[in-house]
Amino acid sequence: MAEIRNLIVDDIDLFRARLSRGFGRDLDSDPESRSRFDAIFELDRTFAAYDGSDIVGTAAAFSLGLTVPGGGSVPMGGTTIVSVQPTHRRQGVMRGLMTRHLEEVREHGDPVAGLWASESSIYRRFGFGPATHRFSAEMLSGRVDFLEPADPGGIRLAEREEAEKAVRSVYETARSTTPGMLTRGDEWWDYRVFADVESWRGGKSALRYAIYEADGEPHGYAMYRQKAKWDDYAGDGEVSIQEIVTTDPDSHRGLWSYLTSIDLFPNVEYWNLPLDDPLPAMLRASRAVKLNLGDSLWVRLIDVGRAIEARSFADDGVVTFEVADPVFADAGGVFRLVVEGGEASCERVTSSPELELSADALGTLYLGGGDAIQLARAGRISGGQGPVTTLHRMFRGDIQPWCNEIF
Image 1 (tube, rainbow, N blue to C red):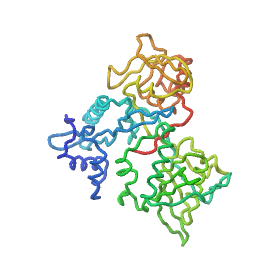
Image 2: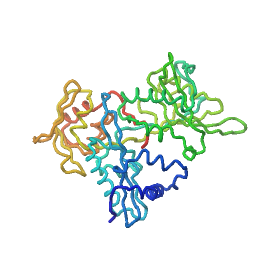
Image 3: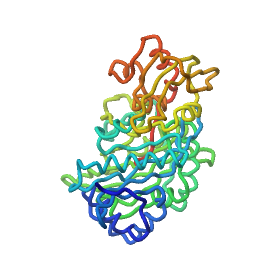
Image 4: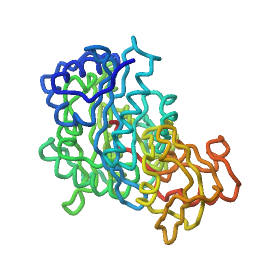
């Protein structure tokens, strides 16, 4: 049985090599890769599974803030870099790593953990449920025709140093109102968001920064790459959007108009379009945007009462539910949720529950994008139709949650 313990400085390079191999990659040869690791990973939140002196598994937590319905933010342990060497699969290494990681998140005082699942079949057993979804979007610029004319005249292209202030400002405005978005510290901005390592580009260009301005103030931005391609001497290049964030309809329409009108680059793709993004409704032919649905952020409540009381609710009501925690026996139990004026009180009680929820179902509901009625039909919630409907109306948010990046 592998031994799970905190990573130490002397083992960082071995850890990085085993992590890369665990995901089928070679160790990043960029000379700054070790500096990036040191900047964003906390050793007391990073774990290795040891078999003798070798590392056979990895896991860590980022210290993140998660925006919840109502605009508040809760500390979140960002589950990341979970890997097991192929020689040690089905030997309990994954369970050992995840259990120790979740214990650390609890000890750290984070009421919530969250992750992007490399395999969707793994994480329900640890209490995670898919709380946000996304579309991958593809379009040909020649088919994109806006119902209302867009004015891309407010767009300017900027280099990273010039763009940084505008990008940060726009991002924070959007983050403060969008459930599922994440806080970003200086190290995160410098070593992840703005980092533009050549080996990360996949044959595409360096990052471009398009800023939408009105009255001298930034209202939106797009970060994207280009890849030139020629077909019978005609430009057939690609625009690959890394991130687009806007704060009003004009900036949204203006940036998308710009991105779909770059000469010689008719193929436009974006991997992370929000479910409620207005782009298809802005077009004369909504089918011009090909959409493919996928899950994104998975959420797991560590402290049920604290997490629930941190968010606001769309409907008032009262419901008593029981949650069975698959890792911490004392974290589950029966809770009475009372919402008045959108504010919640969630306390343990000894009375019988009206509903029984799996921990992953509660995670799915948490950010306001889940469907309690659908989860009940799937067997993840059990109880009477009345309490299920009450739970659905209370948890459902006015804004579709969206997580802006993989971590």
